[in-house]
Image (cartoon, rainbow, N blue to C red):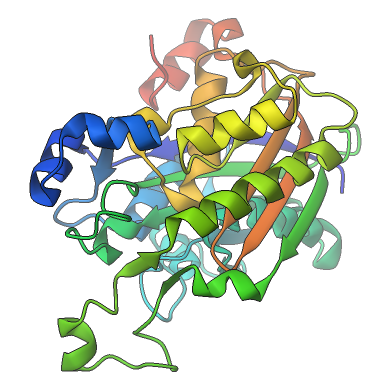
Length: 341
């Protein structure tokens, strides 16, 4: 479908968790984490914060930047693997908080590929249900699903949310998507208990089966191989900026090398946020735009890989004007919702 991004926003918790804090608990040096992952710190939700509160804050920022209200939105799609509840969906919770009473709202579960999947689905809803404007959110608060004594997962994950408002636009270049999945990878990164397969019991809680488990080497190899192939497919015609899922700095560097892409064309913020799962790509998109790295006409390549295994790529012709070009009252409005001065 021919759609344009009209507004973009992000939200991260205030609480900063440094490598020193994580490493002390694990009995390691702080440098050990950064040298292996590229992460220096991450954000954790605090009291009263959750996947839904982060998604709501990002959505409000995206709507305000788009110059729209919730009444203008025809559907809400949330990509998350740490939902607010088993049901109702996190999307329903956010839509309710926005004051929406009739627009469809639903979650999509594709782990770290959730935002790209959701963007593809949100775009397809333009023709499927006649939606004109869709609010697409990627949000996760996986700090609540971590065993903080696990040296594999505890250093990696943080919390955040990103959102975009997309609108039907007959003049736009169509967004291109490529999605895939291989359930055989499900044994390499998972949360075992809490679903129908293994319901919650005192024993599952005592054994930390509600916490994430990951076999890092297998996931690392699969991520590099899959995102490299996806990048070669989606980016064959060239691109101006690559934003890949922020899982590990070495994964991003290895993918760029395999694709023969200079690192100046690869956006990274993993050092400040860690792996925020479904929020990773939209948060990075928002920051790249805020800092002037995205201008109208730029070709933006998105690459995601996550548990399932799932993967997804998108090629987007960027249309939002650079914040630097906004002036006067409009700029003041943008600054009120989080742009750096």
